[in-house]
Each structure stands twice: as C-alpha cells, then as structure tokens.
Image 1: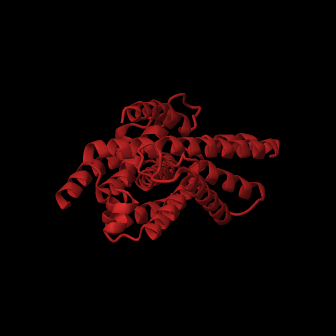
Image 2 (image 1 turned 90 degrees about the horizontal axis):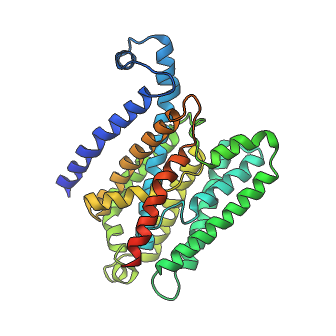
Image 3 (image 1 turned 180 degrees about the vertical axis):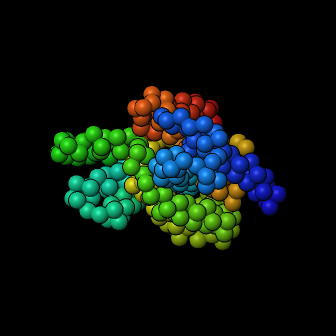
Length: 325
C-alpha cells in the first residue's frame, strides 16, 4: 500500500503543481515566464503581482478545490451504489444543491446559510436516488440511471421555475453560476479545507469502503456496520457536493471521469483512489478553467461547458461498455 501511495503522489503532486502554475501564468493578459518567476520570488512588478496573486491565484486554488471535491464525491457515490456511472451531476446531487443554494440566494440569506441550504438539497437528492434505486435486491444499473436522470430533470424544472420568478437584473449571474462559473470564486479556503479533510478521511475509512464495495451482504458478514457506513457516505458525499456547488455552481461530469480513469491506473483500492481523486479532480478543473478563460479571450466561457464537452463522450462510452457487462 505504501509504495503504491508514494507512486501515486509522485505522479500526481508534480502534475498538480504544474497545473496551478499554468493556471496562474496563462490568461487573457500575456505575462512572460520571467515575469511570473519574478512575482513568485517576490521581485515582480506591482501590476503583475496583483494580477497573478490577488486575481488569478485565488481562482485557480478554488478551481482545484472544487474539482477535487467533485471527484471525491463521484468516487464515494460509485462505491455506495457500486456502479461506475454514478456521480453527483448525473444522480441529481448537484441539482439538489443548486436548488437549495438558489432558494437561499433569492431569500437574500448569507453565505453560511446558502452552504447549509445547498447541503440540505444535496442530501435530499441523495436519499431519493438511493431509496428509489434499490429495488428488491441490490442496485440495478438501469433503475439507478433512470432514477438519477428523473431526479436531475425534476431539479432542473425547479431551477427553471426559480429563474422565471427571479429579478431580471440577477438572471445573467445566476445562469452563469448554474453552468459552472469560477469568476466570483475568491475564497478558496473553505473548499480547500473540506477537500483536505475528505482526502485524510479516506485513509482510515478506505479499508471499510473496500469491503462495502463488494456488496452489503459480504460487508455485513465481514463485520461492517452497513447502515452506519452508508449513512456516513451519504452525508460525506452530500456535504462536499454542497461545498463545491456553492463555490463554483453546478459543474458536471468531473465526478464521473476522474474516478473511472484513476481505477484504470491505480486499481480499486479506495485508500489510494480517494486521495488520487482529490488531486486529479483538482488538476482537471484547473486546466478546464484555464481553457475556459483563454479560449475566446477576453471573453470567458463557463467552466461547466468545458467539463460537459469532455464528460458527455466519456459517459456515452461508459454506457456502451456497461451494455455488454
């Protein structure tokens, strides 16, 4: 376990640092590498320092934390439902969190209440999908996907209703936020702390999650308290999804793509997969946000557009593979 863990860190940590540096250095305003290095070493020009450290760096760190949270949430949902097609966006968790956050926004409540409302919406969506997808035995993939699609569609209808009754002046910002937007993500510390805690919790709980992934009967036979563990995973996935949604809006497919690719590289050990998801999800979203900022510069695309363009083909590929399994 330890050599594999060190191998994972040796691969992903340098990639994470490179992605963060790339995200800070690249933007609508070109800055030479020498100027970037001067800023990082403390000798840069004041204008470059403000641009890189005060504007770009908080956004890049927020993108990293959000991507890591979404990837960890996707990995947890795939363990809980024992299906590689599960993720917070497909199963409606992001939609539920978005509805909760929008309701709190329309009521003019503070950031703390918005995060709590998003958590409640994500938890409610999790309970609905989990309860309806269970059937008479284990989870059926078709029932799971159908339930997730229906719940996500239901949240989409509620979101459309909320947008229809919202003040016209607030609609552009709300629409961008719903598509996944990091333009106003200026405080990366809360999602960063939650991401660190989520990655650290994977170490003591990883072995139990490995057993749970084999099925509730086998897990119970091996001494795992299945109900309690499932409740922990519910709340954990809902909390980190809510934090991600309140930070950057509804960003899809990160939780689907990242865990699937990492399983192909590192295997199915959750003690390794969950910390790797935290790093790889952050790398993916930082690169996607950098592309969203520069593709049609000086205009910016919502980062959710980029992740959807990557995620839809991957989702269809997974559906094709699951057809023959």
